[in-house]
Image (tube, rainbow, N blue to C red; front, side, top):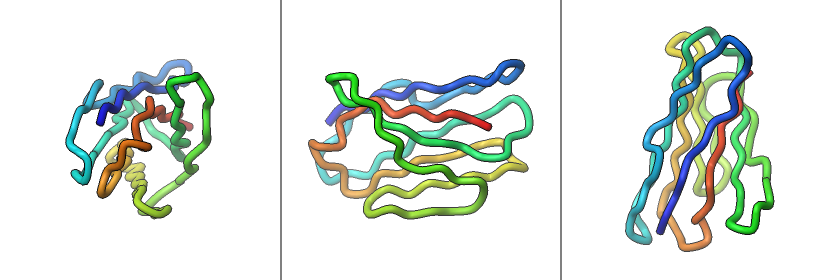
Length: 101
């Protein structure tokens, strides 16, 4: 499986992501992180298919949210957000974006 990761950036805010590219075996767990240079009030996560279709996955302002095998976290004091994909499947091969508010 292959994942790539990208970010949405607000003016005056630097957003770093890691890892930039993630390759793993089917059934393994994946973790992606957005780290912001300044305060944040929430994060919107998206996935983009190889054909370019963009899909909103979740908006989260704080804490933890789970949708199926996807787990989203936002810690505003630490200025970071994570996306966890449990039991990865071939259908999870997308580019993942975070947009920070």
